[in-house]
Length: 211
Image (cartoon, rainbow, N blue to C red; front, side):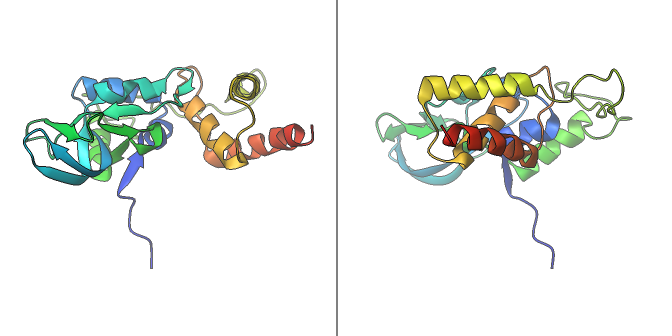
């Protein structure tokens, strides 16, 4: 029996799927083109209402998580949300500082990213784009004189900078996640799949761990 479809994708997953920078998706959310969501713990609103679960959040509150040079390691504070597009924004009174979220906490519901893919003609070369322009060009075939598909030199440099600035990650998996976020924040090269990144990280990890 096949597994049911995924209920949501993270912004990073969506950026890889669409081959666009994650920051662009956050910008489209600010412009009202796409809805971002998050799973809130139990909170109390300014109107003394209790809320929890999956809600829509404002792109302006989380845009700092998606930088061009990779995902921010510092969480953003969500102080407002709404239960649907037809309702008003509600302000969080408790916790008083709002709810801290990381880039991995910001999601796009399946119905929403499927709506955008239909509306913008993604994965259909003959469809007219009626929304933000996402990259739908076919991948170039490798061959003599063809440019590299991914910038692995910059990738290695980004790992070196990450280790220099923040020290060795706790685990290889953490470094893989960091580098997936780094690729999602770039716009000059399409992001690779996670398996490829994991293989590249593994080779570098072995060298770092042997020091």
